[in-house]
Length: 148
Image 1: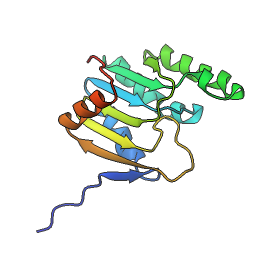
Image 2: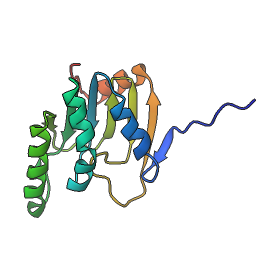
Image 3: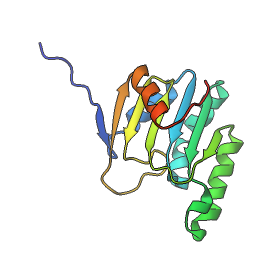
Image 4: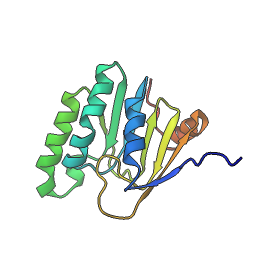
């Protein structure tokens, strides 16, 4: 009997339902690293992140400062950042980051080329795996030590 098919690699057309379910199913902590954000994408995810905060979870978003972008885009980004902070999300800025990943309860890892809070129209993929060892190693390699 063949094992049931399980997807580990997703693209922009099929990752969202699984990704969204991971956020809703989190118990302790969500860490999103997305160097690019868009108002539309943040608004799509905002209620899930806010619900996680309301359940007592630590939610951290690491992205680039609005000053790292074109001047015309800065007011919108500042508004998006203010709304995330207003929801109780720990917003951290790191200029020059390019990694795109998410950690859920330091067990589920999304890693790849999709900007999780601002993906666009290009062909991109994300790998999803469940492994606390991979999560720890990746966090260490990114020099990210975020307390639970």
